[in-house]
Image 1 (tube, rainbow, N blue to C red):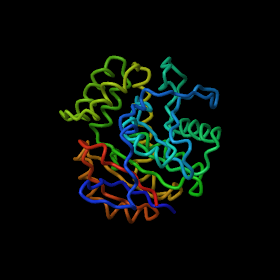
Image 2 (spheres, one colour):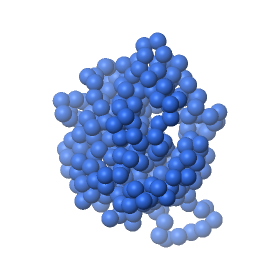
Image 3 (cartoon, rainbow, N blue to C red):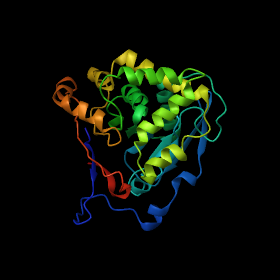
Image 4 (cartoon, helix red, strand yellow):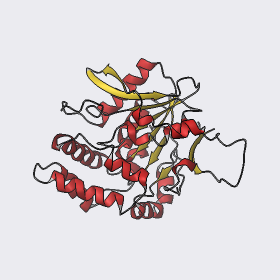
Length: 293
């Protein structure tokens, strides 16, 4: 089984074993502005991006959170595509066309991603999931097994059970008269007053084009996931998903502190998983690299 680790490069040291830094051209490349492809998968138009096609080996498949699209990975992709093929698949209705779509859930998105990968001839891959994109990533991992999905990297997700306050926020997203204030409250909590450009881009540039229909679905499906599984930690206890995990959550430090207190419990319950505590300097995105060895 491959080892997936997330680390911060030290500019003062040089190592030939470290993934090479991207060229200045790649670093400046705004992949968010590049061509977005579409394929008809499971009867729906699915938008995706595909970078680093010339690279052999396992692909990196990204999963954005609800009401985010491929652009959420635009600052990371240039540092990966020199070495890996990087495929970002959008939720239904999260591509350039944001007309309303029939209701769907995390399992449907997992099947859509699998359909895209099959249509592209992708064999082995690693899932890299942000926030509640983790739920479909785990679904996909379970669908295809460990021989095909080599690892899952989870970023910025509350691993413990949902708090009453969080569940109340999810339910507020589902109300026609409460969804907009709930979204604003979530944004305020996520940003925590940061002036970091990369973090602010997620809210200012990448979350537009949605109304109550999409936000309500987000609240409904996330709430259902916690009701069904209890927590992401419990979701992974069955041992059927790919077994490598690195978790970072610098934007929600309180949640990280709570999870760190239960780290030993996590390791006992999810013995197939490897937990890596990662402290990332989110003000220096260019130093965050991903290594698969």
